[in-house]
Length: 271
Image (cartoon, rainbow, N blue to C red):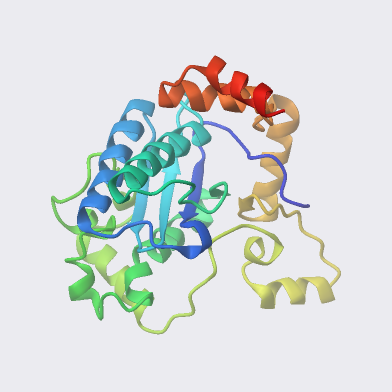
């Protein structure tokens, strides 16, 4: 099933990733990172959402968010991205986009994939060579891992949502260490058949056996979970509607406190 409109239900876990335009660095110093975290704190807390894992890399950001009925996922992420883009452009005297199109989001099946995804995200600095071992990762300030093992968590980071699945801090640290010891890292940046079936090997084996499983590029989970989401979409809707150009311009103008009539009049003059 091809990627369609974004799935939008409250109470689901989403893996969110957004990166710099043309893979440009979106953080040039720690002040930039602190600004994005400040925006996440404001928007996430206002929306009553939960962030269960996060990491800031040089040119992209990963989050695991559990949404509430206070705000849609798109509303949360666009507020963070939009405000940060204005800050970044003003600070560095530039104009234009800094992000590579729309953010990526994947609905995540909680029981089968959540912990694997948390580890995948928190090990990003290790896989990128930014830290060499678990001891260095424990001191890395720009991911949620440090908040899992100390009191240095960001206010938006809901540590309990993940830690309740471990017997304690030592158990969590061992889980992270196991992920560093050469265990094959899954590609968890999206959904799709291969990921939903547990890897390409299982997908090919199932295909040879004539087994066809439900899959959706917007969902990371088992075929049963995909089917449940599809049924919910049929019953309740839950897909974001595409905005007209006028609606989009209106939202941007309201956010930037610009008179929408001036923008529309300018468009008419150019036409």
